[in-house]
Length: 121
Length: 107
Image (cartoon, each protein chain N blue to C red):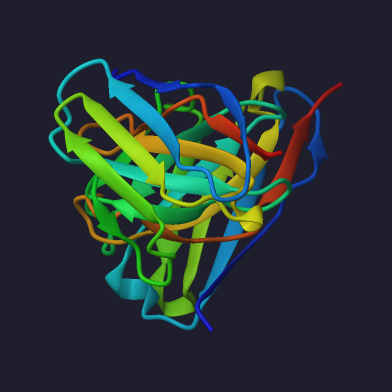
């Protein structure tokens, strides 16, 4: 079964750091670009970051650029999001999602169930 | 950044109705447009890619059309399981942006 499972979400204080993980199974992870997408309570989906299969191209939303770092370990079938200098507005459910192709034309066809990050003092 | 605007923001329809949701981009995005359904408390599910191609496993009552700036998602005959929020997303250029969502309620 094709599956993505996120982990690492928790309650943190503003300014702290957190690392999210996404474990992939059931498909050849090394062949796919991946995304992080988040959704704050009652808000629209917000794309956060994108990484190509061999990590040669990485994009970030302006809202996280310079604070978040996306990475992957193809040997471990895992995607990561290192989040530093967290702010209240980073509170959201974070999803990892598989991109159908590196041009992002085919859409995000596999999603995890999400992990919740709460930033609050 | 490319802004994506959906309409309506919410609607209520009956089983068997034809439902149409529109998505407008602030500039041309060719056909780099995808549609997703999200049921409450669940992850989004891809319905349509490349503006008009049906994702494998998605019922044929769903269809998409459009190119450039104006796009449409149509459900030809609404079913009870079609409730939820529908989002469009452009992937023509980063940041990849989503519409604000259309909440669909079944009467």
